Every structure is written in C-alpha cells, then in structure tokens.
Length: 171
Image (cartoon, rainbow, N blue to C red; front, side, top):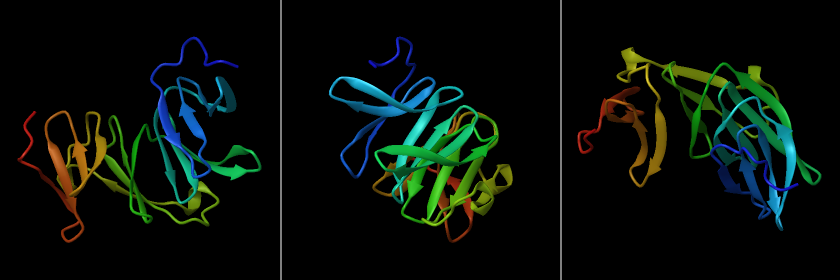
C-alpha cells in the first residue's frame, strides 16, 4: 500500500531496528521502500509518537495506545482512554502527557507494565500552577521539559512538585 490519500498530519519516528514508523490520520504503520504497511487502525488523528523503553507510545485524539514489538510487527498491548494527548518522555522513568482540556498528566513507566491499570498516573491542574484548559504541548529542551499553553510557557520543579512560568518566553 502507498500512504492513504487522506493522511492528516504525519508523526514519524525511527525504531531501534531502524524502521521508519508513521502515525497518520487513522493508522499506525511502517514505511519501507515506498510501501506503507499498516499495523493498526487508530480512531482519530495521531498526535504524538515516541519510542520509550523499547515500546511505542502513540497519542491520539481519544487516548494513548502502547505497542510492543512482536515478531516483525508492532502489536498493541494496552490503551489508556480519555486522555487526548501530546507525549514527551522524561528519561526512562516518566512520560508527560499534555491534553486539550484536562491539564497535564505524568505517567510513571516501567518496561514490565502489561496493563493500563499498572500505569501510575499523576494529574496536574491549576492548583499545581498550570492552566488545565487549552491545548498543552510539551517539548524537550537542553534545560529540561518546556510546557507550552495558549497563555505562557512553564517548567516543572521536582523540588516543589509544581509548575512555574518561564518568563524568558513571551506569547
């Protein structure tokens, strides 16, 4: 198959095996020598794609799906529903999840998690110094993670357990 006619935005990563993996409007697959091999159909636009602890974390409009390499394919092993997301790994211990309307979530991860109930989620809202409405995007920088909201940029402090505005950036 070639890429579908309507792909929306494309998210691309390279796996440890050198595969070029793509998330599109409704699919997750591999691009190889001009052919798109579909591994899974997704319910909505893929918003983020990351390789974390040898697993693929795929954020989409209705949640997160985690994949594991099985044979020559990537198979879904579990879903976390209800979190529309932008994903960003923070080392090998945490994945930060920015949402459209529900603030920020931090998932504590480990390589042996096999079920959504085993993912330790911590929710951050206004009481933690970050707006919980409006799209929140997360980017890795040389100084750590930067959380971008429609109003300002923020950084998280492990010492205080809260967010503070990064005044070097103006929106």
